[in-house]
Amino acid sequence: MIPINLEIINKTAEKARESERKRYNYNFHKDKSDVIQRILNVVQPGSKVEPHMHDNKTEVFLALKGKIKIIEWNNNGELKESYVIEPNGENCGVEVQPKTWHSMEALEPDSAVYIAMTGPYDKKTHKVFAPWLKK
Image 1 (cartoon, rainbow, N blue to C red):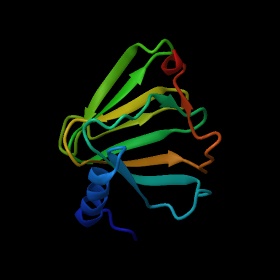
Image 2 (image 1 turned 180 degrees about the horizontal axis):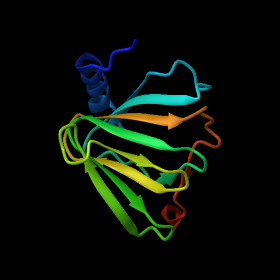
Image 3 (image 1 turned 60 degrees about the vertical axis):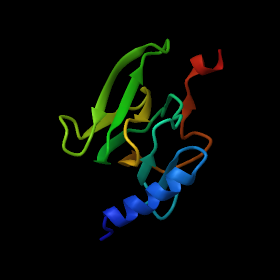
């Protein structure tokens, strides 16, 4: 077993605070070829997670600490819906289906989310960034 605990969250949060991107991943999967990619992502307010989609991958976000907004857009870049997830809140997680434009935003410092996603990981096909960002 691999514990998901405050020690890992706090160490990852420290790296996120020091990161230029204001977020940092801790991978639980050992290899990019794993059929389920499992990631602890700690995100700071102000981190820019660009809207994107995954053509054939389902992605699940579970809040472990803080508050994170998961945002969905339509194909024109208009807000479709959003959910705030937090460990003891009304929504503690959200599942994003393939071909869904989405992003996330930290609403509190050191917000931690566990992400499970269909694998394997291939940088060339992993995600498509929203076309309206190129305008």
